[in-house]
Image 1: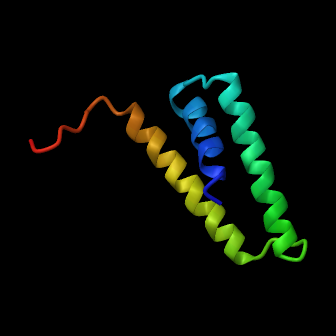
Image 2: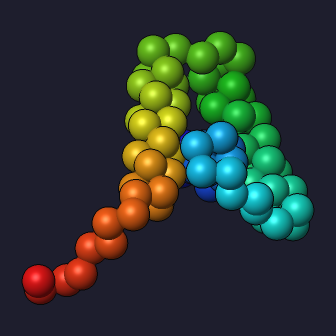
Amino acid sequence: MLRLTPLMTSVAATIIIGERPLTRFGLFAVLGAFVVIVCALRDGGGVFDIGDVYLLAGALTGATATSIRASSPVKCRAGK
C-alpha cells in the first residue's frame, strides 16, 4: 500500500495547493499504484476486504495531511 502514497500525495497536492507534479513522476506513481492493486487483488482472492479499505484510508489521510502541512505558511524550525 505504500506505493499508493506518492500518487495520493500528488493528487491531494494538486487539489489542495495547486501543485503540478512532473509527468514522469505521475507516470511512475500510477504504475506503482497499478502494481499494488494487481497484487492486492491476486493475494486477496480477487476481492477487496475491510483491511484494504483501512490501508487505503490511512494512505489518503497521510497524503491529505502532508499536502495541508505543505501549504501552511508557518514553517517548522527544529530546536526553536
